Image (tube, rainbow, N blue to C red; front, side, top):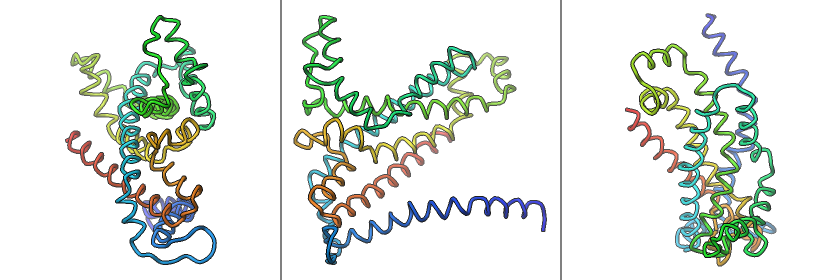
Length: 291
């Protein structure tokens, strides 16, 4: 057996336990949930087979489409908020100085907090009477800009997007710093000799070198945004009048509030399908841009 074959065998053997655990706890539940989507089941007693009835009801339900639209807002806020901010911060904080390490830790700190705690903190900040946001606006003489940030259907989705952006910049910052530090110094030196500095260097040298990392980060953003739940559930519960309902809160409310486990399973399957479609589209678009 050659060295290459032994190396491949070792890699497969090393990955096998992780793959088995991932399959058991992630892949199998996805198919199990899709299976229960074909049944009318309250979580107790016998499940009644209903075919595609649950999936058809999901597609016809206006709340599902409203939840999907709200999730698109979260996705857009994450992709166009978290990714650029994390990349800019990574470019500014790449050097390993004391100040940079401190700022990195501060940016990463929200990720350490429980998402429920983050939701509670921002819920109090947005409070129309005692919230910090309205207090600061009043202090600056901008009382006309004060709002019921989580109750106004015109702005509440944008309000709940900000804590989600703030919460998850840290991990992407670390990923981008690692990618930037892996760019060979010879390439940076050659770029300087060619006069590529500032934005020109970023566009023609840095971004192409870390493009695969950018694609991975965007996939993580999309997948994370589609399963967003904790912060929104704590701050608004999907209300008022389901104006901040997301796919995950919609699934939770139908599964655990009204005990429609079959219908909730159908919703969760639709979330997986939507996630896969969006990730595929994003990868195709970024591949064309890279070419």
